[in-house]
Length: 121
View 1: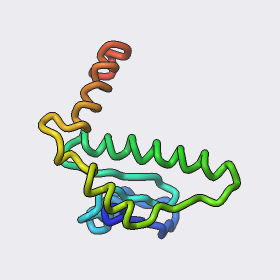
View 2 (view 1 turned 90 degrees about the horizontal axis):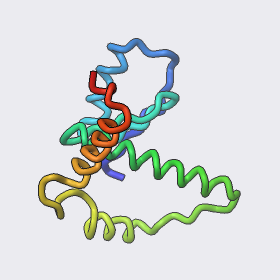
View 3 (view 1 turned 135 degrees about the vertical axis):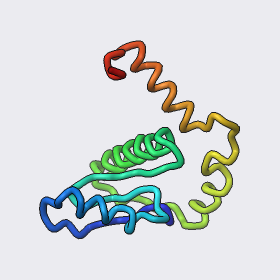
C-alpha cells in the first residue's frame, strides 16, 4: 500500500534521538510505519486519526494470525479489488465532522471516563 513504510533494518537497541530522527524521513508520505522488532508507529491528521489507524491495523494483524494458524495458504485480494474498495469506501471523505475516527476516539474516552476516570489525572 502507498501509505505503509517498512523499516526492517534492526541494528540493536537504538538511541532515542537517532531513531526519532529517522521516523520523519522514512514516513514523510506514509501513515503507518512497521519497524523491525519495535512494532508500529501511526500518524494522522489528529490523535484520533492516528489511534484509529493503530486500532484497526492491530485488528487486521490479529485476523491474519488467526488465518495463518489454519496452515492453509492465504488468498490475496487482486489489486483491482483493493483499489476499487479504497476508492468506493476508503477514508473519511464521505463523512462530515466528526469523522468516524473522531467518533471512535470520543467513545473510547467516554468509556474511560466512566470506568477508569483516573486516566485523566
